Length: 182
Image (cartoon, rainbow, N blue to C red; front, top):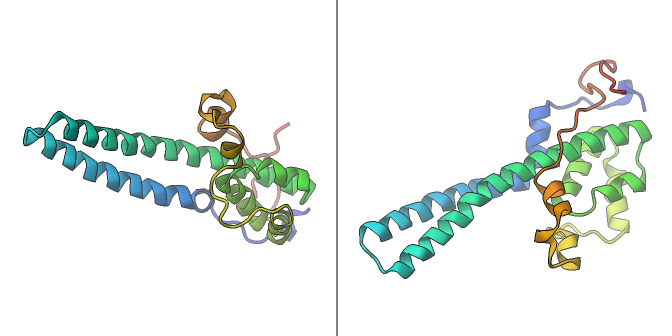
């Protein structure tokens, strides 16, 4: 593939938002929930409600508040997937082997699909996912149904929230490849 054949490339910020768009909608919801639960918790404490009510609102608040950070970390990890997928698709073109790497969850597929779309390979990756039975409504990651103890696996935490920073090998917004990492 040649950079001169590439469609006009969006900014990295725009790509970052597109890759994690579902996550960032949930981020807004978790922020709103945290505010509401925090208000309810303060109200329960100030009105000297029963301990059950205080514990209930505290649990709700902590659940939604912690998810704010998990969603941010998940969005960061999906952006690393996007950058890696874009480099791989640019170097090798569409390969089922590459698409399969990012098949595990809706967010990972969105990262690969965004990278493919920016390289003009959107039809190929969507056709591949359709061919292997991935549906648009498959939001729950496949590994959750296969391994109910996934929360206790290092692979889950490192792949979902702690993906290492990936530095793109190419500057796709320039007219020529400016940066290549050996």
